[in-house]
Amino acid sequence: MTTLTPLTSNSARVAVVTGAAGGLGEAFALRLAASGHTLVLTDRVPCDALAARIEAQGGRALALPCDLADVDDIARFSARVLELTGKVDVLVNNAAFMPMAPVANINAGLWRQIMGVNVDAPFLLAQAFSVGMIERGWGRIVNLASSTVWGPPPGMSAYACSKMAVIGLTRALASEFGPHGVTVNAISPGLTKHAGSAAHLPPEAFETVRARQFIPRTGQPDDLTGALAFLVSDDARFYTGQVMNVDGGGFGF
Image 1 (cartoon, rainbow, N blue to C red):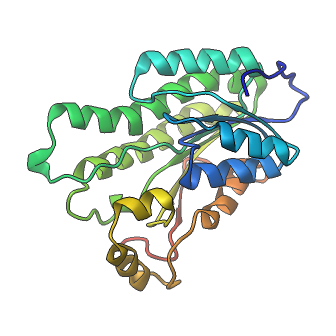
Image 2: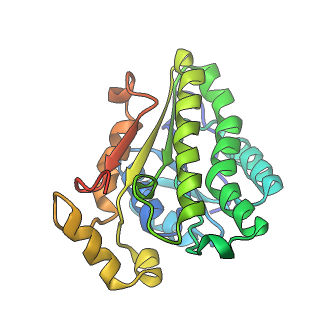
């Protein structure tokens, strides 16, 4: 998928999903496509297979690569999206960089990479796409926080800091954009099992978290898609600046 006919304000809403190659991003994209959104999918790795899957199911999707650690690539990506689609109505800042390392092993370069992907990129994308949202008087920005901010395990100091910054960013953008019909919220997932998390975490991590939740089962990507569907809907017009904890009741643990 390389081109889309530019859309008018009367066309389907256009949603950008970062980190869409798998895991939560893939689940979010499929849910938005099912509700009639036109999708722009981005990741460091190709999203073409997901775009083709959405189109095979009768939806519209465009895959564009972007390195969210590179501010110049973010600017190029943002401009290209607007060139190809004409507008962005929904921005889902899902992508994250989550290396586990003790404080002693986090150098300045690694710290900056984590903050670049997890904090700078959501800000820059919101900055780029909110202009049109404000002009049209409607927009939805959904950021991904994390339950690690409430009880960070060892090795997650930089990641937890970045996700707490995302919460601050969510509140600040909501305050600034609220008068213009643009809502900004965050979803805070608990530990969710998908191919990426299963490959990087031991099975006992999922079992430990599962045992502490009020709903004692391991979270799956589809457990989060209903929250997203609400946050990007017209029903959420008076809901902004909030962090929605979707973690089986594990909040605070």
